[in-house]
Structures are given as C-alpha cells and as structure tokens.
Length: 333
View 1 (tube, rainbow, N blue to C red):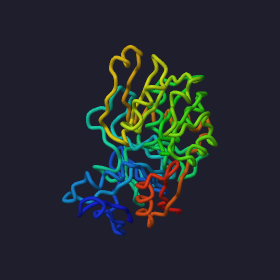
View 2 (cartoon, helix red, strand yellow):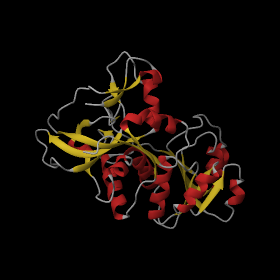
View 3 (tube, helix red, strand yellow):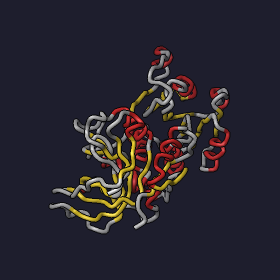
View 4 (spheres, rainbow, N blue to C red):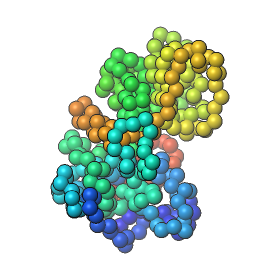
C-alpha cells in the first residue's frame, strides 16, 4: 500500500511517501479500514524529531475516516462496509481524571492514518455521522476530543456562561468556538490576525480581541467564567487577569513556552481554579460525536490536500497560517 512514513534519517529528512508498504490484517478484536481521508495535527510535525530513525519506519497520522473492509475474530459490533471515524486514543475507555497506564495515540509508536489502510481495535472505529464528508469526519479526532474534554469535562461549561479562547485559528480553537456556541455560551476570542478575528466573528464569536489590545479594558463589561488556554507563556497571565474571581482556567497546550511566573497571592485570594487537560477517553469521544450530530456541527476546514502533496500540507501547518483543520485525501474509491 501507499503511505507517508518517517524513518531512516532524523527529523524532516526522514519523511517520505512510499508506494510499497506491507498492509496489516486484523487480529482478534480488530478491524481493517480503507482510509478515505486523514487529518493533520501539530503532533505530526513533532514526531519526526521523536522517532528514532534507527527503528522501523512508522506511518504518521493520528486522525482518519474511512470504510471497514475486514473484521477480526470476535468483532460483532461493527460490520464490513460501515463508514467510520477513528478515535485516535488507544487504551483509554472510560472517562477518568487521567489516562490509564499504557495509553497511546494512533500514529506513533504504532502505524497511523497517512496510508491507504489501517488496522485498529474495533472499539476505536466509531460510526461516521452521515452529515459529515469523509474529509470533515477525518479531522475531528484529536482536536475535537481535546476541545470537548477541555470545555465540558474539565471546564464544566454551562449555557449562559462566557468562555474566553486566546489564539483562535487552530483546529482545537475552532472546535472550542463551535462547541461553546452550540452549548449556549457567550464566546470571546483573541488573535493577532485581523483576518482570523473576522473569521471567528462570522463563526459566531461574540467578541474578538486583538493580541495587542488591553484585554482587561476590553472585557470590563464581561463576566468571563472560563478560559481555555493553549498559547502558554505569552498569554497565560493576561488570560488570568480577565477571568472572573472564582473562575476556571483550563490549559491544554503551550505553543509559546512551557515556563511561566504568576502571582500566587492574587491567585488564591481570587479563588481561581487551574486545570490541565489533554485528549480524552473513548466515552468522551462517543459523546463528542453525538454532540456534533445533535447540533449539526461541521468542522472549520482550512485546506484539503491529496496524499501525494502531503509535504505541502506539513509546510502549511508549520507556518501557522491556517484557520481550522487541514485534511489529506487518501482514496476516492
């Protein structure tokens, strides 16, 4: 089969599209999926620097959607011919405060979705909503699940509350915006890009702040109940300043740096809550897919590339100019 791999050389030099990869066959409890499309994530940019080039080649890609073409022994809940989305989380079944030991993500260390077929546990193949194209379904895994857990499991967002999302534009942020609006929340976003602020307003954001604006002044008449942070060092303290006393800040990323300083006395006198979040369980994944279906949500799509142009997709994501998700079309058959 054809697939996009990393191996043989460190970093970007080890990336290659190969045409003669060995296909896997499903074992007991597994299904084989013919992939129609895959989703690109920042995780895919990091793996070439983490995967030892001396180890076996690995097919990259965590998100995908396609059609089941074979089922292993003991699989009764899913049939050949069913259209499915891949839940990229392996081994985290029930909602819990942390993932269990042994939790992994599709696409490293095991093979991923940038190939014509993939074998995954049957429980990781979730029925695709008919309302979504394969390209749309392929991009909701990592980003959608991260957004869902951050907002609802960790952040406990309720209808009528106000949520602030710094750094709108990436895949998770656009899911956060759509999910929060569907839940009846007021949504404030920020971006250094005027274009991205305007796009966020067209998607339903109630207020879009420039990164160089005085956020405290701009939100004087707002009651921010929840902040979902992923920018990290560049915005953490500014985000905390706009949060209502007793409010909650959930952080799932740190794209501008992992180390911060903040005033502990202000924090504990303000009765703030600081929570970490990443990915989510299979239980939450199924809840998220149902939420998407019930609220007729479609992911924000930035671009769709063909598999032979996947190197261009990597460069586009690396430049951070995208608004929404990037999909890779694998097969039209």
